[in-house]
Image (cartoon, rainbow, N blue to C red; front, side):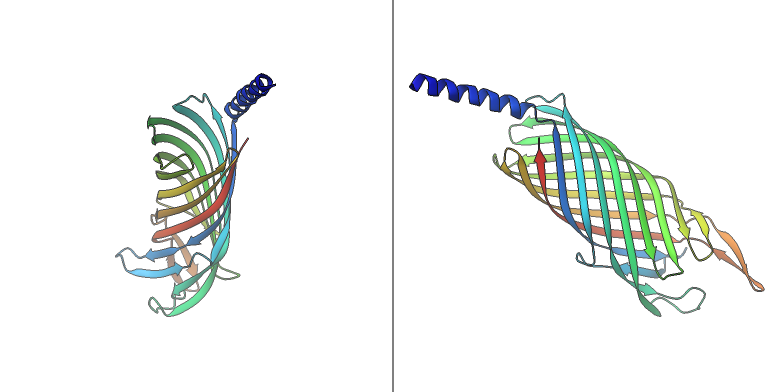
Length: 272
């Protein structure tokens, strides 16, 4: 009887191990809060207007699905698809167009919708029992709609190449701390504004992003994580379009801007 029990335990162990090794897919979902600090500048570097929000003002969800292949004891390859959508308000501070008044003469609330998605490849390998290094490349798309009013909506869109490097430190079998750096090089960045129905070609739209995830292994099939992401976005001045209004002609363009965005994510990941 004891031999049968031992044999059963061995068979269960082997079966469980094979099943664990066959775990190819991962999926995750997280709640996201975003803090935005956006500023626009004229050619001389003078502040024109700004947008600010706290983590509870802009919020949404992020979803990811990944597939592991060529998985070994000390290395793996992974492809993934990531999708994030956020919605909320920022506090606008600036001036009305063509008013002649300076920064701070007009305050309002802006409604924002942000969609960010990418498909990526990543290679990871262990250099020590407690340390993993990884690198990869992604192709992404970003959409940002700023509704300053019902008649003034600015929509920024671009594709991007996203090289990335990272590391993961395993504190123990259940807890690990990560660090990743990603550069997003904007491709064909444009801004459409609804007032005059113009499309502006932006000089460039690039993002540098640093992420710090902390992951706790709840069991063999589920992880829980919290992640802080710090992001700097730089948009270069667009082309200029001349617009005649009455007897006057105006140069209309999208100015230089920077955005220091922070994201706080809380979620769960599943392996199957």
